[in-house]
Length: 354
Image (cartoon, rainbow, N blue to C red; front, side, top):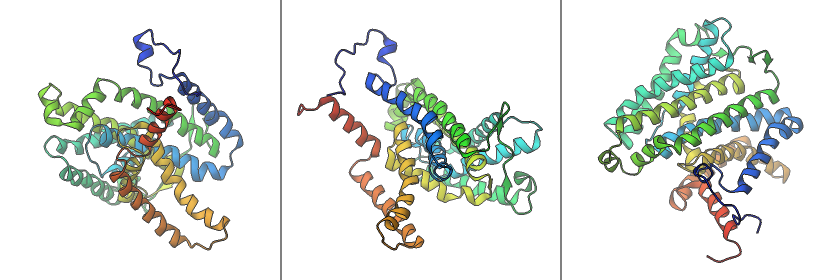
């Protein structure tokens, strides 16, 4: 009975177009932000930050970028790991080659380089689609793997092929504890998530969804495929590039080309399938599921006294992921986000049967 809209009248267009039109949702989001920014940094262990929260935030950001391209614009991409690698290596090169380069500018520079890289490999989408486009974006993955391994300037002539992030600092604030790294990732996720949510609700977002639903009809009514598709690739690659820079700088600290392999691309694609295509919230759900499931498979059997080797847990993880992907594609193509939306709708109508 508490989730009702009774008495909540919209008297302006701005009020009617809010991201969270129901007051209970706005209150819940404020409470969630307070918990995330205040309570969690004060009461969570360093292990939880490093093993759960920081990977979850970065993967959520990367999945959100991929969801803009695949879920909202309908352009299949299998090169997300390559876009993350471009963001990470570009941010690294900006820091090592420009003395005193601020961290935020390095991250944004990595995102811009990934955006240019994504637009170049998004050009085939103007002529091909479906499986052929997926293969074209897969070429980006192989190209970046080759470039990072064979071009010495990418790794600043590192003999081992691995690179290390420099000191993390923003305007005199040195970021060295897991809690501070968590706050950095959380702040960037909130800012970019808000921008992405408003973008998909704008005319640009409607153009993306029109191209996704029926590109021929969208062209007939005046939507330019060149602008719609390439803008989706640009925005998606920009967000994914920043996520890749965070993955290298904040989570790994030091990395090599294998950190952004094709497995990462498939993992992000599975995230948005399970979480929900065409949903910002679905990106968060999918990332949470992928981060938490390995921990559950590792810890729960030990709590129950059941011996489970690491190899067995890995096999079970792959089996569960595969089964859930097939399940959601057949039963609920919109993923966990749709189930969450349905539950909220039932709360608004309960206890009435309709």
